[in-house]
Length: 515
Image 1 (tube, rainbow, N blue to C red):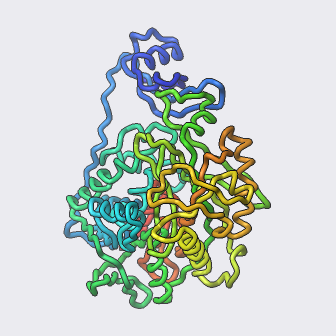
Image 2 (cartoon, rainbow, N blue to C red; image 1 turned 180 degrees about the vertical axis):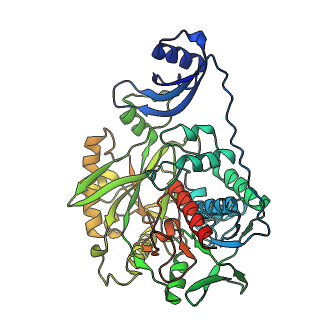
Image 3 (spheres, rainbow, N blue to C red; image 1 turned 30 degrees about the vertical axis):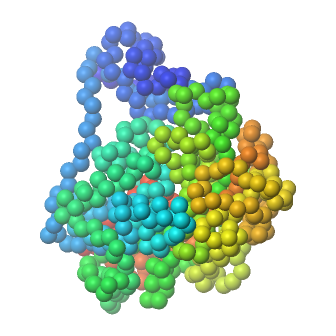
């Protein structure tokens, strides 16, 4: 027999079976010796009071053996099955491929970038020399931006599909079971590459294909139906369905669609900076302590404020993280953040941005490139302000609010380097002013946040795609092209690893119904 109950544990007790057994016995009013095992179903940190605790939903096994669950997944052979071409090997593309295999279809993934192992050399060149390979960087390559962008698995997209199924797939390929129970699951950039490689091996073993250094330059369309794709070298791949899962930074794909007369639309996104504090400041504020208990993970925050009718908000918060250079061209600055699995770096960073709507940007709203051109212009301004070679413009927080050039900059995690700049030279006035008004308010919400020990690094601009590729709600196909399935972040239908993976699964299911 099993029974479920809620427990409260202090830091250090959350993984102790002996303690959990005692707590569960008390909650269920049973002798401890009757409980053979306590399985944690969900776990979250509650730091609202002066005493930080873990709140847990558990299942107690009462005079019954507990058999650990296995997560091995078995896939049929699809070597000779009908092909589905998947453009992009990010979370959307990889999970679309796995779903295709389950449906008895052969996924053929074409990825412009390199395999995970080979990407590392290009990332080293970005960080150490400020050199960007436009085809292999933090955004392009196996696993997409997600591979080297933290591995946060928190999502609100619970109605789009089975979040737990996605998490279980990650566990089957090497992630820890903690991601199944933690309220804010996280894998870590140091562990994601091995997991992504394992997913690729699953696809290959089932008879699917994964092609690297394979850049799509043309969709093959005949009489309103997709027939395949053409690659940069001239090779043609044929299929009756193409899942376009290229990510939010593949600007040449948007150009390709416009050139071929395939409908795309301008879309709102968000723009701002990445803000970094010493992690100890965030820990003191959130855990109400001078020194964080070693049994607690580095703390995170989530802040939002309305300023002049527009939301200013933090997102993609990386405790114990690194600010990363995520440009995909040689004349731009783009920053993002990530954390290793232990989140043991001395800094905490978060994107802090303002929503950018179509009416905020001059030009014709019918121009699908209106928002993308604006986004790129800001990234180019940041590049020039930093002085080149991916050096990022930066300013201390209080200096930014007071409109004062920082005399010096604090130590920070951005490896290509930072340069003291008044960020108002880079950000539009209406973005700059809203950030200036919001940051002191954030400081009143979270003690210690508003400080000159914090650095603002520009620019955080790839928050989401500035272009949307329309699709029919029911069939998930492009309204002009039968068999073309716009998918994931790049098409405007996802915002993170989990939501992209779910969208990939849903597109594969839709493709299966077509072919």
